[in-house]
Image (cartoon, rainbow, N blue to C red; front, side):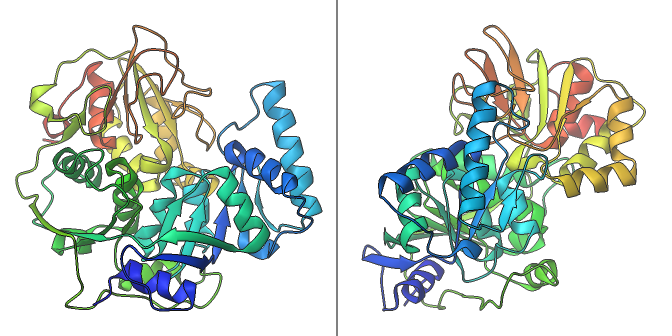
Length: 415
């Protein structure tokens, strides 16, 4: 019997489809940011296309190179802005509005049962709302711009059940890293992942977004948390249109069925240069740091900033610490609540919403010989600059480590 992915793709294809079938699916929403949008627009023009299939279903956020840090970047932005105007695309989010994977949910584009395609690998974030969401290349996105359709192979599905209460100082990021450690960076290649269990049910929407965001780091095509009351509450007043939640049948066919108990999980650290190179914090504590980065589409939400501020309150960092809210609305909320003041007094640097440090564009690049502890999703060699070492952690661990100037256990600070 069908899984969530099979049901969504069957609906989008207009016919019954099962795992490993190829379908031509109608897309509900398509997103390309300034980093990939320029390539998609170029391919769109090379197809001699005149008009997009539906300007109301295309979303263009500027987030990767914002504000423009070179004249090349400014020219890139200029070209996309002109195309957006020509195509009468209304869902355009210029510099400072936030990271695409935060902007889409905040503006009600991520909805249960929808098929959402993004020209960015972490588009699987929207699976936190019960959607089938995945990333594609710029040429594929150009085809979506033209036709509103895309061929896809229906993925097999891995079922992951997680039970137990997350211990103090341990968060959704630690859970995610632990799962990636066990599955591996290619253990879920072209699979969908469905997340179940009491732990998942107890996660906030922000934490579910962290979990689904990093499903791609296991090779997954998408990661999905079935919609529930938390999902519906979040979407009240936000959802762009009516939606219909989709759930797997009780006897749905899964290619794997995995189980985790997080009751005794330690904070997790991914060491360079692979996301599945994960260790308990007790094995890496004391590693000297040059920089701490708290933010990104993985951990730049209000809850993440709040967790960091709780640890840094009335203390001062010993290493340069960059904090990047994922969107303008998060920055405003954090400013109004006093979180930004707390972080600034602690010595952190607040940078505008965007992706700069995460991909090594600007506002936090590291060099050869430097070590950064990041709350982002990737620690590949050269990711945050031409050289340097990147360790991945939760916001709690990052904040505790900023206080010590070395990788530190947040449970020791929270006592």
